[in-house]
Amino acid sequence: MKKQIFDMYDKIPEGVDVNSIEPEMNINSEDIKNAVVSKINAGKGRNKKGSFRKKLTISLIAAAVGVTVLGTIGVGAMGGFNEAFGERFAGEKINGIYPGGNVTISTNDNVKAEFLGIAGDKNKVMAAVTVRKSDGTSLVDYDDTDNTMVIPDLSMVNCLDENGQVPEQLPFSLSNSISQDPYDGDYIYATTSAWTRMKFAGSDSHNYYTNENGEDVCFDHSDYDMRLTDKNTAKIIYFIGREDFSLTGETMKVKQDKLYILHKDQVLTEDLVDIILMKDGKPAEDRREQMAAVLEKEKKIVSEQKDSLKENQTIIAVTDREPSFENYNETDSRIVKRTLYVATVTEVPVQFEGSWQLNLKSTEIDINTADGLVFEEIPYRVDSLKAGSFSSEITISTDSDLSSFGNENVYNGWINDLLETETEITMKNGEKLKGLWSSAPESTGDIRTAKDGTSFTVELSYYRFNDYNNLTVWSNINADEIVSIRIDGTEILAGASK
Image (tube, rainbow, N blue to C red):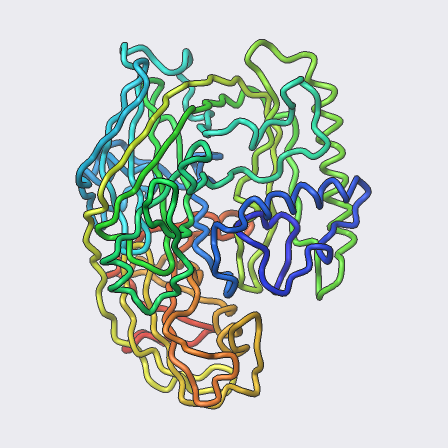
């Protein structure tokens, strides 16, 4: 499996020695390693499942770098769904939106928030909220909202510290997922009721915990997408993805202290870096040297420019994708475009707190699958394919002896090999998307050796590409318009064109 130094999410995978990913650069590698390891350690305990790492890292924030990544439509062009989520999904109305139940929201006196609704499937849910000033004045004093980005924490992109000095390590990750801990500043989390745990009793009981409010919550993956829709309005889409228990009927809770609106005033430099620092299990010295050179150049630029900044200006580093978002298919690139901007910062205290019940309904459809499937000379079946607008749930079985494939992490090597291969979804209009296996296999029992075969269920999320063939934009689709799903070049749908 490919390794990258800037994989900052969640816990360190079992069997991975952090010392083995130390970058051998012409910069202070110890500082970089310490920064990265501290990021990883900060996420320990968030996800107790030390296993298959096709995790639900959705990377909504990647879209905040530039609206052109997603495409836009006019607000309300297709009704309620696009009014709430149009900027996120480029005009595709799929499930519509649900109003949420028992909605409570509060802010400070200077702003007002409006809850627009929720959308999603049983394991992935988004909620949309708008924020405006109470007195009707604008959030920013300029009209150029296309060149803005909105974030909850300036430190994640700021190239200057609180004293105006250049930090030892420039920021490399565009986003940090908001914590699930309600006693740790901003947070996004969802409850896990006793009914849900009973209904999904086969799931790993260690994947939920009781917080200090006495609520049972899961180790969910949270994210957000923030942007200005006009100079008066900030829209925030909060996301929760879950592997083990359904979100339907649970309660999402959010706390957001501030918004930072950044206007990109000037481009200082733009560089491409390959963030895979290993190749064939060995350090890729050319990539390490190139990254080191880029970071050193950026630090020099920041040092030269910092004393000429105007009031409320800073220098930020952003990427065209989330560097710690993991692509697993061998053909995917890990090229990241880093851009340094001079940016004007507008800080908006909001003290937003919200709670709403996730009263959405899943609209999955069953799709018939093909017979005679084979991978690595092992016959297998797709027993069930339930396609939704956010992801598909697929159950795969084989009666063959898999013991010769050994183990990778805690799963059989054949399963890992299958889920590492290229997966492509083709739509009725000819558009091709890439599938990413986004949750650990379930219902497998002990599949370390799988001598008598196995059956497992996984989720497949849908992604579009950027210019470097990176899986950047998590997408929703109309499941009725899927015409083909290919795993390792093999068509798994019955009746699909060959």
